[in-house]
Image 1 (spheres, rainbow, N blue to C red):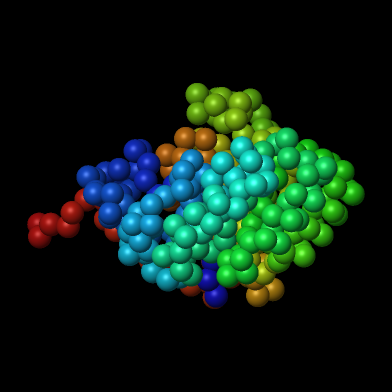
Image 2 (image 1 turned 30 degrees about the vertical axis):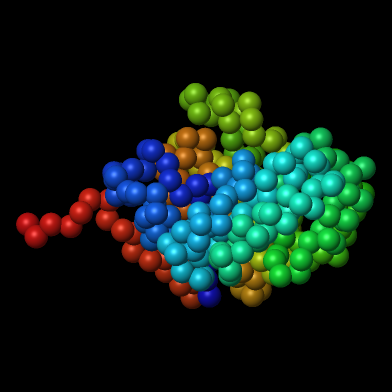
Length: 283
């Protein structure tokens, strides 16, 4: 039984020399990260389709059971809004092909303006995608959280495509006013939507955003510990991504989440031992 956990990125300046060795060449950074976590969000692909050689490097640095949830480029989701983007989609799929099984799901993150009136566009887009990948959709329009009919219609579209609904749980962030620059920045940029914890498929994906204070982050994820434990008992295979506003401690927090689930469900396989941040010496 395996639980996959990870962060929003695999390289982050505050981790260097503290959790991960420093310096590390680009071709070794994901390999080092993968000794801490067994999944990662592919946020970099949102900004541009990577070269095939770059993706080949990602594949070389990770094992076949590692999970990368690759976000579709914003040119497809935000600029073209899933319309007339066949060439961009084709180029993206060709680029990420070397990931093989590591491409756990392709992530369709939609802008907040993409609402119930656009569900026909989403349904048509998902139907045109190849069946060789699994898909997961993140929505931010309030109607998909507040209006029961809109929720039902979106679930029907996703279920027809065997696609998952990715919740981005920001409720802990917005429980009290921000106390740092990073939290203030997150308040300005992150979606303020209710928590959703229903899975549509056997491979649910969670994005959880806590606070800069570790104790508040851990306190806020307690409901998810129970939900993820239940999913594992049901035979589902969840992936959980842990964020904080500054992400300074996201790496050990992701492992802490894994440990907390494993404390309830010892059958979950342990994570690998992290690569030492400092080189080993004889004395």
